Amino acid sequence: MSILVTGGTGYIGSHTVVELLKKNEEVIILDNLCNSSKDVLDRIEKITNKKCKFYEADIRDEKELEKIFSKNKIDSVIHFAGLKGVGESVEIPLEYYDNNVYGTVKLLEVMKKHGCKKIVFSSSATVYGDPGTHKYVEEMGRGKASSPYGATKAIIEEMLENLYVADNEWTISILRYFNPIGAHESGLIGENPNGIPNNLMPYIQKVAVGELKELSVFGDDYDTKDGTGVRDYIHVVDLAEGHVKALEKLTSPGVYIYNLGTGSGYSVLDIVRTFEKVNNVKINYKIAPRRPGDLAMYYADPSKAKKELGWEAKRGIEEMCRDSWNFIKNL
Ligand code: NAD
Ligand code: WQD
Image 1 (cartoon, protein in one colour):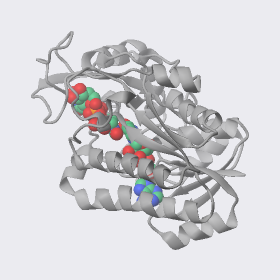
Image 2 (tube, helix red, strand yellow; image 1 turned 180 degrees about the vertical axis):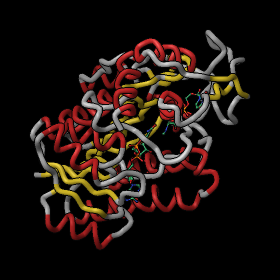
Image 3 (cartoon, helix red, strand yellow; image 1 turned 120 degrees about the vertical axis):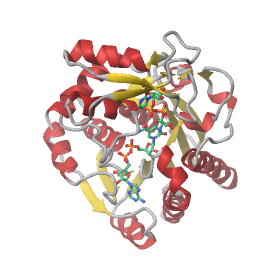
Image 4 (cartoon, protein in one colour; image 1 turned 90 degrees about the vertical axis):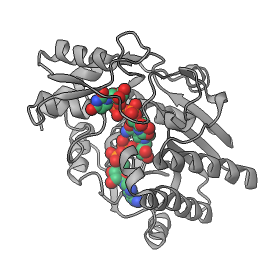
C-alpha cells in the first residue's frame, strides 16, 4: 500500500517524503511544480537511496487523479499541495480559493470514490485568527481569518469536519503548523522561494549570501521582550516527523487536530543574532514599520501532540539557523 503525498516536491512535503522513505514506506508524489522543481526528486533519492513514483499533476485535474488512484493502491494521503502566500492571497483571492479549496474538494472526491479515507492535512496556526492570547491551544477553535489564505485553511478544516459527520469511516488529521524553518542536515533540500521572500528565514538567508542588502525588521515597538515580533519557529524535520507520527498513531476513524510547534517563542532579533552566531555571518538589518496584519506574539501549546502522538520537537533555534545556512550556501 502506498502513501500519496500531494505537494511532495515542496518545502515541507520533500522533508516528509524523506522521513517516510526512511520508514520504508512506499511513497507516490503528486505535484504540479508551480512552486518547486523536479530536481528535488534526485535530491530525495540521494539522501535516502530510495526512489518514489512521481506524477506531475494538478490536484484540480480530476482525470489525472482518477488515473493515479486507479493505477496505484493508495492507502492514505498527506495533503500539502496548495498556495501559501499570505500577501499574494490578498491580491489574487480567487486563485487561492480555486487552488486550495476547490483542489481539496476534487482530491477528497476521488479518494472517496476509491475507498481511500485517510488524510493528513497541512493546516496553519493562522486559523486561530487573533484570539487575544499568546499561547494557542487546539480547543480554542478557529477565529476570524486575517487573509484569504487563512480563510482557505479554515474552510478546508471545516469541510473535513463536515465530511466526517457525513461518513464516519474517515480518519482525518489536521496539523496546524507554526513557523517552519531550517532544512535537511544534508543541505540537499530546504526552502528557496523565487523572488523577494516574504518570510523571515528565507529573507535572512538571502541577506546572508549577499543577494539582498539588508533585512527590514517589521516593528520594534511591540509589547515583547525586545519589541520585535515573537513566533514559534519549528525545524522542518521535526515537522516532517510529526506527519509520520500522525499516520502511525491515528488508525481509528475520527477528526484529530494538533498544533505542531515547539511551545517556545523567539523574537525576530533572537533569530537574527542566533543566525549570526552559529554561522559566523553578518546579517545587516534596519528597523522598519510594523507589517500590517502581524500579531505581536504567539506560540503553540504542543502538549496534545506530545500526549496523543508521542511527538515533540527536538531541534532548537541554533540547529534551525545552522541548517538553513548550510542549505542556502551550498545552492
Ligand atoms: P511549498 O509551496 O514549498 O509546497 C507546496 C507544493 O504544492 C509545491 O511543490 C507546489 O508546486 C505544489 N502545489 C501547489 N498547488 C498545487 C496544485 N494545485 N496541484 C499540485 N501541486 C500543487 O509550501 P510548503 O511550505 O511546503 O507548504 C506545504 C503546505 O503547508 C501548504 O499547504 C501550506 O499552506 C502549509 N503550511 C505552510 C507553512 C509554512 O510556513 N511553510 C505554514 C503552515 C502551513
Ligand atoms: C515572522 C516574524 C514578522 C519578514 C506566516 C504566515 C503563517 C504561516 C507561517 C502558512 C514576524 C517578522 C518577517 C521580514 C520581519 N504560513 N519579519 N522581516 O507572518 O509569522 O507567518 O508564515 O500558513 O500563516 O502568516 O511568518 O516569517 O513572515 O514572519 O521582521 O522581512 O518575522 O513581522 O514577526 P508569519 P514570517
